Image: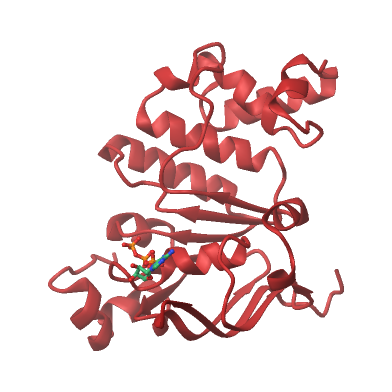
Length: 255
Ligand SMILES: Nc1ncnc2c1ncn2[C@@H]1O[C@H](COP(=O)(O)OP(=O)(O)OP(=O)(O)O)[C@@H](O)[C@H]1O
């Protein structure tokens, strides 16, 4: 990509309607290359719809959705967008519970096309090394031969994050990565995301304000399909509009 390109996501005037109801309403959303953006907002604000549009699951009524300021994502199918290097993790883990942790990672490895061919494909020593490195990275190396269904909720989420990262995506989209996790698992996820973030572009949707405070650089607050406020965590928590519609009495310690 040209050095002049600043944004990995360039979204303007994005409108998505469901039977006349505007889930996104003229939304402008710009994410710079290598930025970690957190998106928060009340239930129904349009956060998941935004990710659905980026990955081609939902088609907008109008607006621009550009990857690297050039590639029109609206014209592409979901698998084409995934192949461009946009990896998405949904709220609930989508892993193969009957396969081992190692097998799950193996089928996500970029060269493999289907579950069947992946399982019977012979990995080169270099491929194996990369997969092992990734298992170390997410802290699941000791559980590699365990069926994924036996992992804890947090471990399943980390496995899925590993399955996305092994594909070396240019942009990672995470929908509520710490939902349902214990305090300890949340802490571990924070440090994992902090290790992942440098040199990577990420959009993370999250409700857990402690988590947001721990990882956020720049935060976008959505409300009724529009940006209510954008900036660093201090700016967000001190904004009266955000206090009113989202944070309520919640005050985040910033020291
Ligand atoms: N496929 C759909 N058909 C009809 N309405 C939808 C559809 N998808 C989303 N909506 C509506 O659009 C609005 C935005 O939904 P969305 O899931 O994007 O919100 P959200 O900010 O992610 O909320 P939450 O925090 O609860 O996940 C909601 O009112 C939702 O009911």
